[in-house]
Image 1 (tube, rainbow, N blue to C red):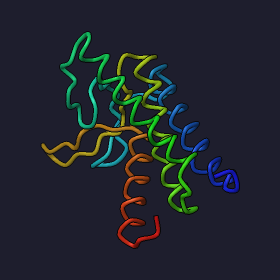
Image 2 (image 1 turned 120 degrees about the horizontal axis):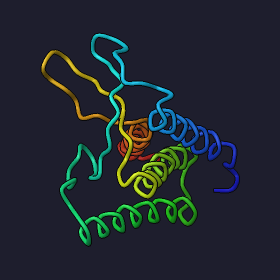
Image 3 (image 1 turned 45 degrees about the horizontal axis):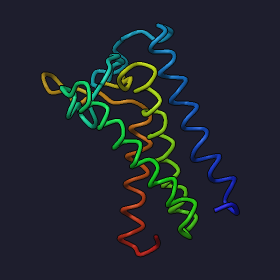
Length: 153
């Protein structure tokens, strides 16, 4: 792992900083809700659940358990990065997942939900609103699946 410190920085710190900055700008009104393209707009919202708002109705103890579960998944990925001899590509993909996951995890403490702000839509159809961390998590997960399919994990 330590021989890939450059990759950990590139694939971990930069996405994390970019995501934290965009969320800060959204929360503090530096970036306003607006249409960017005919199918893309900035629309800020908070997601207290997980992917696509699932489990957002949870309250109290159930919400705390969800937070613990998310923390445990992050801890597993961090453990994997430090204990298992991953290829350079697998490590970079895992770091992307952890970087995005930690940023979203921080949101849960700061804002009682994840700051989502990217809205993709077409006419009356709207994709669930997401953020930069979600993009990094998705890219990292897709990269890991690709590596597993090619047996390069």
